[in-house]
Length: 355
Image (cartoon, rainbow, N blue to C red; front, side, top):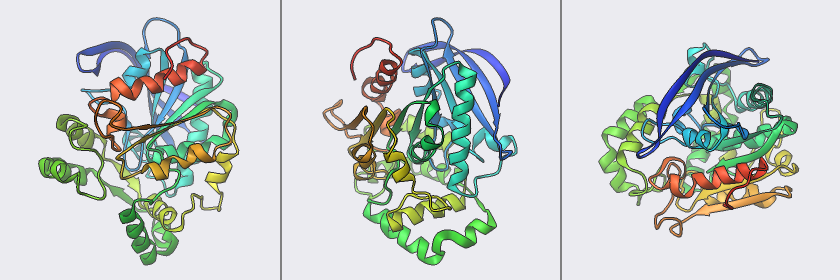
């Protein structure tokens, strides 16, 4: 199911002056639906592969959620011995270049992810693989896990949506949007896409003002001082991408109703909560897009016998942590990334320090 399109040896930054040499492959997966999805595989050139992890980006994003020229969580995990697969969902990044249109609904992401996890398990040689999602990518992890639990070594989310809209402004916006188009029926039938790259360009041009206002804005992607402006600029310019308007409307429906369900009324929250899979839930104390109140219940409601909740706060590096900061912030490589790597390596039966 995974086709290798290219293979190269690359030397790239991990963070700051830290660099590594990696085997890099561009892969294409074709799902049973016919959608063609792109993955970037990275692994270290020496030593054994200790485990495999699939990374899933958030709403209207792409592979640059995890990897920038200046700072790369992908490269950090690969350097620690993990075989990494950076997935781009339907209509995003190279997946769009392969001719795959933006998803018409959230369940497209869910079934694609389940198939990709199974394919990566076969391709990597690891019968079970970890899945790591940020923001909406966390919601994809929760919804897909029941479909392929036999192939999952553990579920990890960072600011991952489990509940959505506990930020009061998001809740008000959701009520307005769903009132205009109840359950997004018209938008879904039209199958329209939305390109957020222009918004990203505007945000970068206004970055000094946006950074100054972030403390007072009810919705903000980062905490001033916790992520360098150069990192924010690269992340926004490269990482804002296409998405399906139907997916956006569906998420607004979740925020308005308090549910987390599919078009067929599948209760994703209830299905995931019953699973006994290793679970690591990470939140930022000042995340206003996926607040701790949205994120923490995934850990609270899970039946897992091996579950961990970690909320990063000023006790970790003396800073506050926002939605972007927990992934690529100035101190993420010191405080957050080791928690992720150590948690996975411990479940690969590899000795290492405790998170």
